[in-house]
Amino acid sequence: MRSTIRHLLASGVLGVALVATALPAQAATTSAVVFNTGHLDLVDVAYEAGTLEVGVHDEDNDIEYGADEVKLIVKRQAKVTVPADPAYAFLGTPGVSKVWVLPQIENTNLIWPGIAAEEIEAGVFAGDALTLSVQSVTGPGQLAIYTENAVGQPTILADSGDGLPDAITVTAGDHAHANWAFGRAGTYCVTVRAAGTLAATGQQVTSAPATLRFTVKA
Image (cartoon, rainbow, N blue to C red; front, side, top):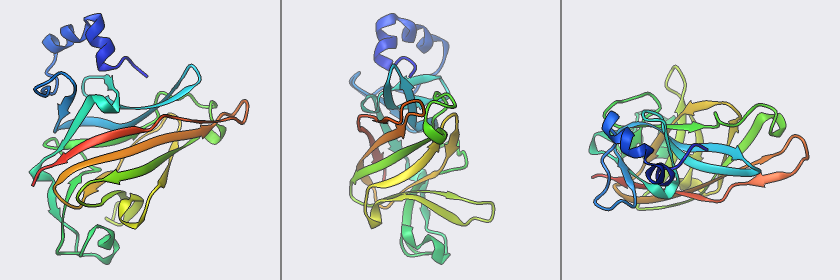
């Protein structure tokens, strides 16, 4: 992965970046950077020196963070009514329930959540495939990650409402976006990890778990 925020602070590079570009506001302490807008790969998978890693990539400023280095804010503006279509019943009562959605299609007022394996070269993993496991979600409501096609029909990638873990297939070199929907306001911790089989040896490698922290505003 690219250097984390701590490495940049140590090198002095971040000081220059803060002057040159508008970075997200930091929390009152320096322990985490707070994001409530911007293009973020919430799950950025990389493989370096025999280790599979999962982090968060700020695409707007090209800075890589550990999951524990960021706090993610889901703003009130993300609150919407579940579409009046039975296909969306996994989010609640269609046409009635409210959910907070970080959208698949960019909305500059909200975080635009991505899932990426752009740093992994073709041929490293068997079939160029990795598995992203959503292992646990703690919080006041469920989390669903899903995509929508051109006619608005959903494909569920992960849903804590019907049990976890759920597995999402990620292709080496790819970058994709999906909707992240939270059922209630409050604080969530979402733990993910990545795994893949090395093409050269058949060995399976697994990342350490990474826990994302979200605050969903009422």
